Amino acid sequence: MKVIIIGGGQVGSYIAKLLMENKCEVKVVERREMVLNKLASEFPSEHIVMGNGTDASILEQAGINSADAVVAVTGQDEVNLVASTIAKYEYGISRVIARVNNPKNEWLFDMNMGVDVKVNQANLLARIVVDEIDLTNMFTLMKLNQGKHSIIQVKVAKNSASAGKTIKELSIPAQTILIAIFRNHEVIVPYGDTKILGDDSIMALTDDSGQVELNKLLFK
Image (cartoon, rainbow, N blue to C red; front, side, top):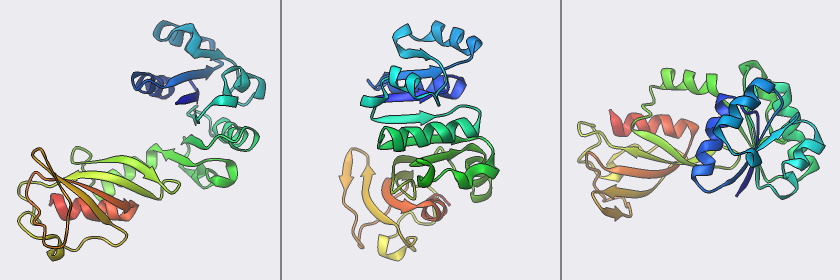
């Protein structure tokens, strides 16, 4: 997969490292001299493109014509929005991900601006606090339908009230489908009569509210 990352700060450089570890072809676009110097100490020069991520010629230099995804993670929402719009509507990039810095601007980050997936760190942190999502017991495997649904994996707590009950005895959230249960080295296809045990890892398809309810159901 070929990925262009716009913004080489802490977030951009970290994403670049993760993608490169997973054998992706990565180009990082950055215009700030100090940040470029830091990138040069971390990555081979062929992965770094100096310039403005909203400049079409710079994006073409980074290889946007053959890119599979663009990730706009600068510290400026206006840059991330413009870069996303150019990537989607000028170059037809199928996967555009953008960082939201100011939560008040989140409403702008939608398909009309070319954004497939928006990442609002403030909103994520707030939900973790308010919804009591324990990230050590639940993680997202894949986002679907412009981020409205996800395939997640959640671990059942040993002392959960759900442990020992069958699936049909549980109040599974609406818009949620249990896909598989991982128990020791066994993969179990879940049915109504399947019993949930403590320490099971459950894979499910659900929406945002379903993630919260599923976590409460299986971990508490």
